[in-house]
Image 1 (cartoon, rainbow, N blue to C red):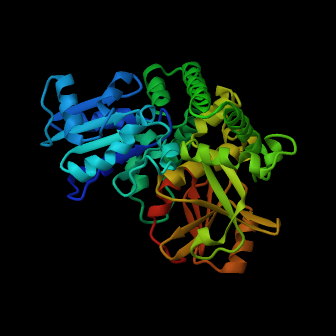
Image 2 (tube, rainbow, N blue to C red):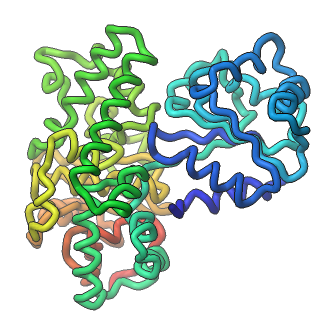
Length: 439
């Protein structure tokens, strides 16, 4: 399956200042598939070591961490000399052997000519451990579940995907194309962006098979909670994880610790939220009351919303029935629009938005997302239905007078003065749109 990050890997390969690359991302988002494809397509030689499947590979990193010695031992094991000329070395599942992460520092310092990628499902958790992390010695990339545009490419709709990604003007699409994209979006909301899920549906067209795979992925995440944390932390992580659908089902989706456990406090679960963030399993949007630059400087980090990294897995957690796909409106409104807001959060992150923020005004008005584009700040309100009410957007505009205000809804592209409607399937193009003046 074509992944947008492939082009970033090509740029990394050509960079004269290249460092060992650390590819992060949650379990099952397709890291191994992507690097295997990249290694086999772009290099004459490709060397793959999986430390979870082959724990004996740890012996290459015992004792000293001299790259020359490690490379010699790997060469002897595979029976061929590993050179730096047009060869990619991939260390996979390195969370199983922390010394591999540490070794990247020495590969950068002593053998920078080698092309090395390392990946693992919980590397974000490891990054916080400064005693083993090669600070300043690696490049980073993050792989997310497949975005809606990547879904379109996988389902043979490359021209539609290209149209969305190269959009320069706000004008309605023909009704036939608009409805076609909405139909795909409904399917995507059910399937989500996990590559194995999408491939299974492409192969079998069986939603029951898809749901089984989604549940297996959720079970794998729960095993990770136990495997990589102590027992008490694993219990807290499971509690918080299971509470996320309930939190999103509320009209006000602000996260409450008491919805995880009665009378719970921040001190009990703050570490858990950080663990899930670093594992790539959740996206967090923080509240701001004053939209000024930098947005992070005006955020209230005690008020936030938590979204799952994949909308399909959210549906599996609450067992949404498959017939929701064919219902014209229900998929958008189900669970107080939780799927739609969750979808938008994932699309923004996948399209390059670094951190998510939302705005409230004394509980009287709320705008779902606040976006920074260069030195401008724009509000984005998300609507799951065709309701034209933009009271909160207008309240924000009256206070702060942004050049443009955005709504994302099932409606077509449209601009009227300072107001722009972006159809939900077009959220991916928001960060790339020019700062259009009011028409």
